[in-house]
Length: 233
Image 1 (cartoon, rainbow, N blue to C red):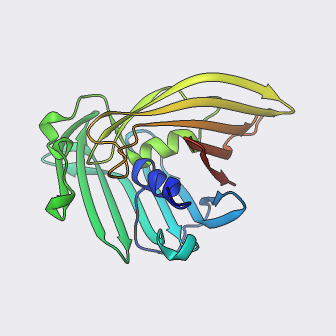
Image 2: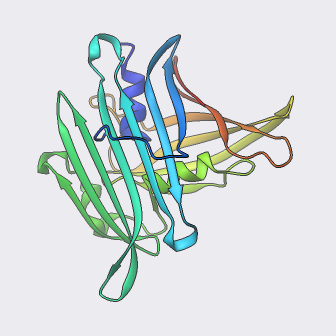
Image 3: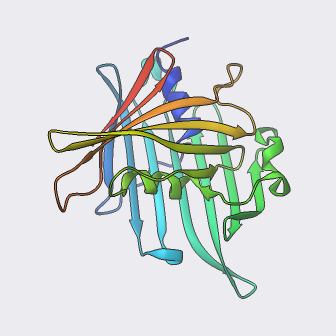
């Protein structure tokens, strides 16, 4: 397996890819590192609260080995009105020299009511909204729960238009004013990540500032097999 593949796994599982656009003021930005090499940046920004909250996740990879994994990703989650109802609309846009993919999802109270994936050959059986279990949130919302958590995040299920992922809490340890939360990431419906390997399990070590009044993610380490990708704020 080449060195850049673990990060491609993260992009498919936890991130995606989009247009490189200016980062909003106040965005939380992380360096994505594999070993000692910085591959690019991942940024998250949110506005509002509750049902009206808007969340945006931006990924820009521009330094992967030989440029093979370079590309951009945007995941946007926002509240929209349709037929007198307030719905959650998710869009995911991936762009690279190898391919492009666009995903749009409508959710109503945690239930997926519509999914569109383009091009059509990027669809999976879970791109059929009727096959998606209830009680899911979108990718941008899920990343926001991790970035903004006060203490270890509770478990949740994410849907990215192609699969359902369960993120579950494990152990927690506080040392030197740092809280480390060990969590698991498992694809529970739909295909695994990165054909032909179809990875379905990742481990997440999340580090937060545990001092009173401090919140937000400082570092995340995503592991699969012998490889570890670090997101450093």
